[in-house]
Image (cartoon, rainbow, N blue to C red; front, side, top):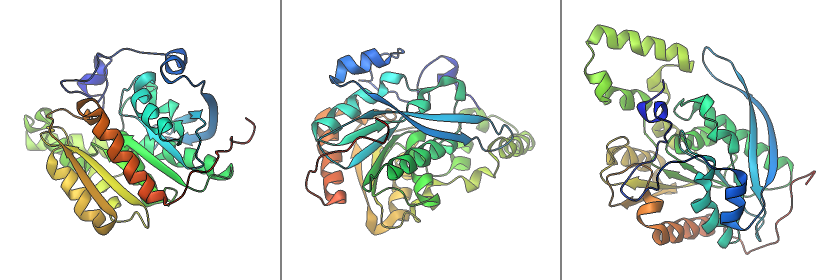
Length: 292
């Protein structure tokens, strides 16, 4: 279940203006944002499927001027520094930010948002235990799919920004060139093994279905117009499923998950406007998590 971009040590974000991939450190993050992050431990979760591996959930906490908090869940294979452009405009808008650091561990590979849904839930529960009541999530790629699935499982978010999510995992697999080259009998074998790996049939791993079960959570879908991995039809399927609670912004790009690099100012303005409307509150001083 390791796509080629992970084998090469890359990330599931690509496009004309995406910076070259390189690993970073918390020192790089601090230098870029001018804020020293604090470690936020959010317990341990267990992977789905056949592995049942225990995984620690760790986030970086950046205190903002506001009590509302945004949880950032990155794309597969993202470096530690992937949070920087997102955290920067969110902090500039006054929001408190928690970046799901565990999501950057390349040893976890890619599981199409299934594990990141657990990261998102564990992080949100920790924040709620610490007294935060207005929590949003911003996910990219499989991180976007993960936060949609998390909210459908347990209503913890006031708002979700889903940047480049797929709609249905079986459909995503079946349009992959590596799958279309296989004979039908072997495709059945691959899908059976994938079911064991993920712990459920791939057609049941469906952010599209889950988008219809978000409760009162509002949803902003960000979609690259000519994305070949998660095409426009995927974003439209999410929009239709979520109905009145959703809106979609389409970016003129043929990349994937690269909207913030294609239009940084437009991205920040669109997301901040959406979050402000979703939270419907005035700015209030942020509190530190317990033990910090």
